[in-house]
Amino acid sequence: MTESGDQVTVKTRQSISEQTDGEAPTIRLMTTLDEAEQIAAANDESIAMKFADDEVVFELESLSCFYGSFRAVRDISLQVPKNQITAIIGPSGCGKSTLLRSFNRMNDLVDSARIEGRILYHGVDLYADGVDPVEVRRRIGMVFQKPNPFPKSIYDNVSFGPKVAGYRGNMDELVERSLRRAALWDEVKDKLKQPGTALSGGQQQRLCIARAIAVEPDVILMDEPCSALDPIATLRIEELMRELKQNYTIVIVTHNMQQAARASDVTAFLTMGEDRAGYLVEMAPTQELFTRPTHRITEDYITGRFG
Amino acid sequence: MTARAQAISTREAVEQRLRSGGGDIRGLVLQGALLLSLLIALGVLVVLVGDILIRSLPVFADRPLDFLTSPLSSRPARAGIAQGILGSVLLMAFVAVIALPLGIGAAIYLEEYAHDTWLTRLIRTNIRNLAGVPAIVYGLLGLALFVSTLGLGKSLIAGGLTLAVLVLPIAVITTSEALRAVPNSIREAAFGVGATRWEMVRSHVVPYAAPGILTGTILTLARAFGETAPLLMVGAIAGTFSSGGVGDMLTGAYTALPTIVFNWSGQPQDEFRALTSAAIVVLLIVILLVNASAILLRNRYDRKW
Image 1 (cartoon, helix red, strand yellow):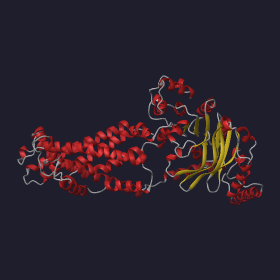
Image 2: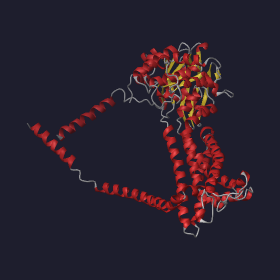
Image 3: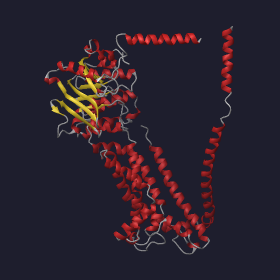
Image 4: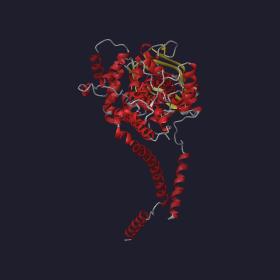
């Protein structure tokens, strides 16, 4: 008994050493600083993706985000194209959400947060003196990871944004239009006075999308909008995103690679270095990034081979 | 055959192990000790309340209404607590008008507006410390500040202000806690559709925290209602209300329910024992009702996030 047990142990040990002797050790997502610099150097020659000037909604110029002395995002330069769905993917903790939340100055709410570099929105520096973050958020709406409807009626959830923006038109029509665009109208038209929190998770998230588009934004930022939803609700949201991109520019953070592959037009892959600061590895049309990634680490990530 | 025998022996072994657990003696002893401490604590309370109830029976049996509506008197057979009730209610009104708006306002500023710096952390810590300062210290403060320096004299205004200062930190703390119970996702949602901080606070955070704020507020008032020590310092000992108008009432001598209890318990006549107990019972009932209404409100409007 004991003998055979020992043999098994020995065998396992052998096979492990075989593996490590082979071409690559187990793949890590955290790159060493050297590797990060190599990737950065490679990228410098062919910086992310370039779009025609009138197609660019956001342009990031070596953006770094900090929380106190901790750098969460390092030196990201990229462009976000108009009326397309841009996905940001990458492992947990690589700064995807931080990056997204710097697009509409949501990180202003965190006392210790600050940025270096610039974010140009239609050519205007969002963090320049005199830029009103409230106006920024009216134009750049946001849908959050966990559905967060106000504990008020469905109607009030949608009408709050327009109301504080001083909307003077027909509110009933605006509410209906927003709910229709969010593909929720048919399900809730008879219960607009009921609390939004009584809806199912998927419906709540569509209500949050309706709430975001009610203020007629230009961009909708989505921070893992489907992570709390079941697959069917997820597909509905993805379908909705494809409809919404006719009128809006969408940036979505997701750690679901199938979702990025299915729903987005352009994908940016982020990972983090040893200092835990996230950086951009590559950005490409989604099809291309998923079939012919430039960097080894991208390939490892999208094929699910990481340690 | 052997496999089967092995299975049986395994089953037996398992059963033996499962059933062999002897009584966990130490666990039982500990459980007993915990139960005993609960019984002692409850026992003391039951004896105290029971004793007071029994002593107060003669008063409530003989003249229940008369006791509540009669003024103070040195003759036990005619003494009542009407002035105490009036005085306590007026004091509560002062606390409600002064301490609550200030406390709620300060809490909203601290939670929703103030940046997280060492100064705000210092302020927060000190508000918690202030809530733990003995009431008698607030009495001395009231005596020095309101009675002497501001020249309000030993009046109901001075007493009300003193109580207001006493419960102010508690009002700030309970309101802060209610505000903190509103999840950040709600704030982000409001900011996300382009609301200003004020619109976010007014339309969302404060309305959603309102039940919690209300509950805390009521408990704060109950605390003030039962305070005795500071009132003794600022002169509510044996005063009776001046017979004049409202102005006289506020600036003249006054009394409150807890101070009547204190005063009567020191009287030499035996009949005052029963009166003291009866006054305590009234005080307890009022506080119980106030606290119960707070709990009902909380259960009624409690929100699960």
